[in-house]
Length: 157
Image (cartoon, rainbow, N blue to C red):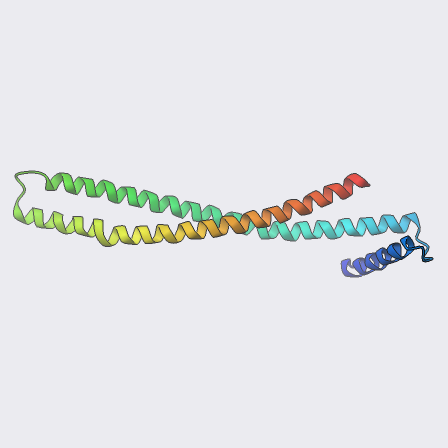
């Protein structure tokens, strides 16, 4: 039987169980109750599968974001090292005027636009990381709640 029609049957039988609990005549056999439990468990398993499919891409996205954050940090450190090397060369007393002008231009490029671009990218990636981590946490909590419900159902059987 298709899952949708089985679920409709389960809902109908569940309604019948509720009516029986209210002392209305609605005979239900133990086999029917077992079928209802099994259908509910299958539905829960299906929801767990769907929820797992939501978690996996978020987990992968977060890993990529962290990798990009590390790449940006390394790039910033490389720029800082490059800047220190340029500053060391600029501090040399016997530096020719033409070389000093070139080093000043290099320093301005490293300390200015390049650094600003890296920091802007870092800010963006940090915000994205926080948002993605929050969404991942939420989806993982939903998955865990479904798994706990499944475990409780299987333990009760």
